[in-house]
Length: 293
Image (tube, rainbow, N blue to C red; front, side):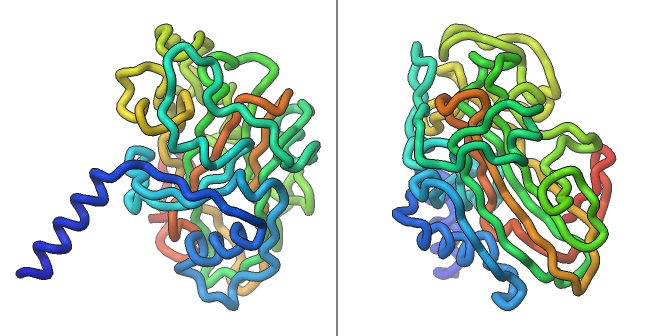
């Protein structure tokens, strides 16, 4: 009984604790973070050739991210700016509280293709090979951006891709990869212009009232929004759970990439839930998209 009470107390404390991001200091720290957090439920021999391209300070480990919709509240953030900005509070009257030109990858062809040829800046890219334990894989992620709501339907359509290549896949991206970071039941990528509530002004000036796939959108641009005092980005998506059929026993390649579009300012980020890279499980359909639970 004492142990149970202690456990409940610790769980309550975790739920009430502040959202916090610890940035990586170098590229090796990024690799170690993915090994220990993202792949923690995969056998080490099933992951190979883990590589990072970009500015290490754009990557970090987050805790108490329950408001993002993650059950664990923990995971990895990849940004087009500085990971240390993510756990700052939003500020009324400011157009950009997270706006950093960093030393990320410029001109990534896959990110430019997603954004209809628009120039890509500040790319943050992780790549790896994996050998699945079954014929299915899974990712959980949330997309957030400082481009909301000011630059919706402008020339700055920040987005990202989860590019999967290997046996049985014949896509349009590098290595014939498919982008599996899509809106449920569609071929639409997750980006500023594809998930929003229209174009608005600076923070606390009144949220816009449009709707482009707004069922997946959570506003954070008004002082009364629940995460306003602990999350810097002006909006973020609900959790997307993506599942994909693959061939058991074949090696596959994954490229996770996020980048600024049009210019290198007004940052965006992708949050990957701890232990969310999995193979196996049953496949169901939600909104026409094959996912796993």
